[in-house]
Length: 67
Image (tube, rainbow, N blue to C red):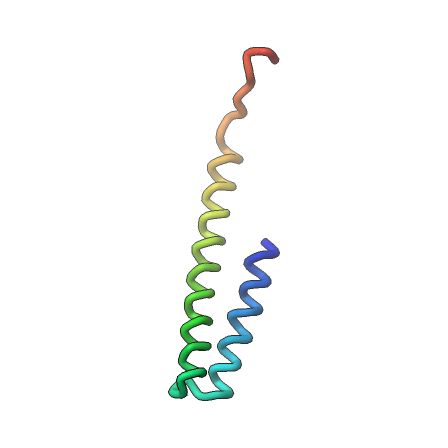
């Protein structure tokens, strides 16, 4: 999942920026919150993709009446 990989790098960059600025500063706190938000979104995206992959890979294929 390229999208999740890219988002993970962005979340890591936000967390690193928060550490450099200090999480108690307004900008550092925003970066830390952004990092946490992105990590939650990434986790949800990966879980959803795994779920639907499992659903579609185990479901029998439907054929149309013209086949």
